[in-house]
Image (cartoon, rainbow, N blue to C red; front, side, top):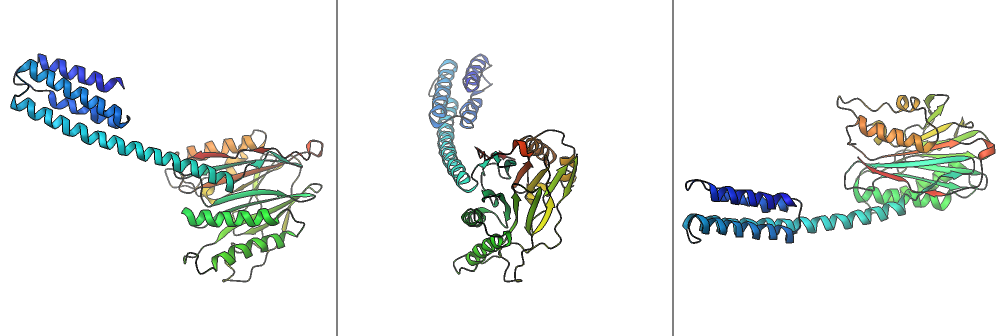
Length: 363
């Protein structure tokens, strides 16, 4: 804030002491112009008024207030000060609007992506959401967790497209999952329920005409068996970290993404994978693996995950988030979500389910 006033003081003193043929008054317009870039309309107007007074002092000191040259300089300064003050008013209102929009986005994010528990039975869980747009907090990526009597179920998904339509589809999938995942129905029945919810909505005549679908991975992790059951609907395979090696859980019979029943009749095949104590499974959306560096090379997620030597899913996601953003130069081309799940030894397992706010970062 001192810079504009210091500028006015320097220009005024130098202009008074300068030779008669030298006029530095036009430089005074820089003071309100600079102020408008960071200050509100009241501060900008004040600086403009001080600049006008300073120009008047210069005019009286050097010649007279009615001198044609100084009269024109003062008139121009009044006009420019008024313009930049209006600009500052517009910018301030825009910033207030963006603040309100961010508040709404954060509230919507909290409703859609509810905080995941830090621990559910024998599982430790952590999540992170990286928004591609600087002002965005929500998008088409989704994840959730639910409990049955003797297992934990998780879903991660990615809606095709962006904007409000993607958010609406994500809310639809999350609502269907939360309504049905706690039941004892088999995993294919749960995925069929999600498919039915998405397909019925997309077939609604009032829904957008563009093709839309949701890739998803739905997991069921029993409490007492060291196994993980997975149904993949066109989603990137989870990564299993064990003994310093990260390997994808490739399914042999993946289903089509949710919402594509008009292409083929859905078949949801459950595939099982060993999931031992201290193993970590990473669920992610394609915004992670499709991030590129300056040369256009995709982010080597499995390689970077295997290089991690910390402990716990939260530490893993902190490492991967920082590494991913650094690799992509701080900007992601698409939203990215990650969920890390670690199976605890039986001695540490318990019914604790303490919610922890999901980390939201802006790329």
